[in-house]
Length: 85
Image (spheres, rainbow, N blue to C red):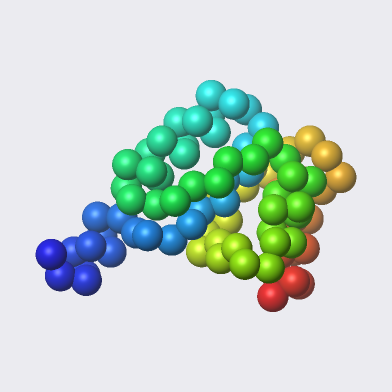
C-alpha cells in the first residue's frame, strides 16, 4: 500500500479525545482506533493537561468537546495547548 493510500485509510498518530459523555467518547475512540490511530481518552481538560505535561508523549491530533467540566472548556484548553507549543 502506498503512503498516500495509507494516509487516506487512517493514520498512526496519537489522538487525544477529550469528551465527558462516556458513550460518545467510546464511540469516537472506537472509530479512530478502527482507522489505525492510537487514542487516549479523557473526560475533561483538567485530566488532559496532566497527560499533555508528560514530556515523552507525542499527540498528533486534539479532539475536544467545547463544553467540558473542570477549570477549562474546550476553547480554553485548545488555547492552553497552542500556547504550550
